[in-house]
Structure formats: structure tokens, C-alpha cells
Image 1 (tube, helix red, strand yellow):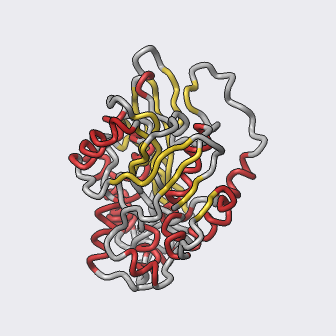
Image 2 (cartoon, one colour):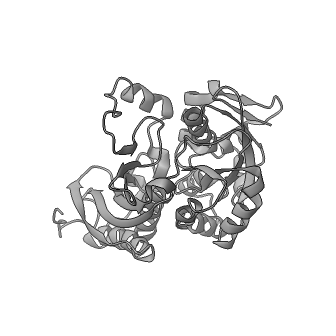
Image 3 (tube, one colour):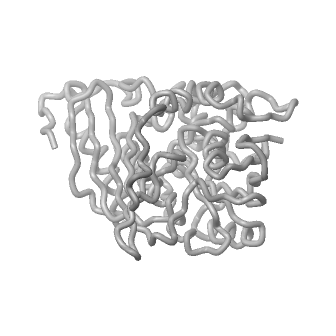
Length: 354
């Protein structure tokens, strides 16, 4: 890793002020990403590539042998909070989530570090790395190296590698008609982050934000062992609607979602007051033509369904007869707000909200 300049000044500013966006709200809008990737070479010729780019899944999966497959992913973004240790924790939790979302167990991480070394003190950058390392340690994963650059905006994240049995891989393309959709974390991270930047977030709201974004989705590695669990993804920058649509497109099905998903404390009041992220608007512009909303759905509820979730929850497609068992399992692992938010239905790949 590149050395950090000891001459960097002590910054008299908010960490988030150095970035034009933050967290998973930094992601390219779905329509922009699709236009960039259009025409990219197919990867189907690789027989051991179990999961590639075809259905916008959470990670790549490569079969190693009859009992092991490698899960590989990378995720990084700009600060969503000002505390450097918390920023590192959130980014690392978010990156590891992609391994869990494939039913895998993380085994190794590499740090991705881009920092404006003329603006940030070495202690600040070190705290970011320490925050990420603390999450990896809690997950039983070493940060075994990485790469760093001098960049205009602060960027941190991980390359995360994991293992999963080839027969236990969970993807976003194997949902079945009639499956219940379970969301493990409440929505509203983007709204809280916007309120934070506007200095409208109180201490309780900030605590709820940190608790949600630093909660590891480790339950995902158990779901491949549970009968009736058919598909899995995590809900991040494209919002609940966007990631549900990816599951629809991958599975060749439609989905029906409730307009009343679980929300983090304080989010509804902020949303009603018009607090939202720019990414929420970009998300709707990207995929709104594939969504049918109830005629009387207010705009603030739509904003919550498109709200970018930094280190969001898992979206599980499970057969109706196993849904109660999965809910009990997930809640027993600390996701007390987990709830059924809809179901998969036969029909075109679109989402209906009622």
C-alpha cells in the first residue's frame, strides 16, 4: 500500500464534505450501468463460472471442485458519516454482505483505499482502516493486503472472497412463483444519511443508522441450508424496488410488494418532510417504467421504496410453507424487524406495489 503523507493537515471539516456522494448512494444509476455494460462480451464459455454478470447478482461464483466454490466480490464508496472509524465499519460490513448474499462464508479480504492525502491526517485514514478491520475480525476474516492511491475524494472498501458448497449457492435468479419475500433490515438508510448531511438527524436517528449499517448479514450463510429458500440478494444502492426487479428479471417472474415495509425509527417523519437522496430520484428514473404503483401512493412512500440502502438487509425468496421458519431464524439472529414484504408471481418481470 502507498505510504500516507505525514504532512497531511488536521482537517477542520466534516469527512462527508470531501465527497459528492456517500455510501451506496454513490452507485451508478441502474439505467446508466446498463448502458455501459451493454455489448460486453459474454462469459458463458467458462464452464466453472457458476455466477457471472448475466443477472446483476451480488458476487461472482467460480466452482473449484465438487465441494467448494469461490465467491468473489468488491465494494467501495465515499463517506456516508463523518466519524472515520464508523465509515470503515460501514464500508466493510457492506462489502462482506455480498458474500453472505450468495450463501457463502467470507474467508479473506483486501482493502481498497483512495484518500486525499493532502487533506486528511494519517490518524484519520488509519481510523478508517481500523474500523474496517474490526468488522472483518468480527466476521473471522483477515484483511490480508490491498491497494491504496492518492485520490480527490476519500474512498474505502474491500475485495471480499468466500467459500460456498456449489449445491448451496443462492442467487437472485432462482425465485419461484408464490415465494414469500422477506426483508431482514428495515428501510430508510438513505433518508437518514440525507438528514445527517443536512444536520437534521438527532442522536437516536444516528444510533439507528449506525446499528443497521454495521450489522453483518451473516445469517445469509445459513440460508443455503434451509429448505424452501430459493433465491437471495441484498438490498443496497438501487433500493428495495430496484433489487426486487433484479430478482424478477433473473427469475423471469413478477413481484408484488407492500407499500408498508419496515422502516428505521424516525424515517417516516423525515420522508414526509421531503428528506430524500438524489440517488432515490435517479433510481426511479431508471426503472420506474417497470413498476406499477397504487394510484393513491404518496411520493414519500415511493421515495422509501427507491431509497438507496447502504449495507442494507437481505431479500429472501422462500416458499410459503417455509416462510415462518425463515422469519424465526432471521429474527433469532438479531434481525428483529425482519418482515414479509411481498411475494413472487407469474408474469412479466415487473413489480406491483399495493
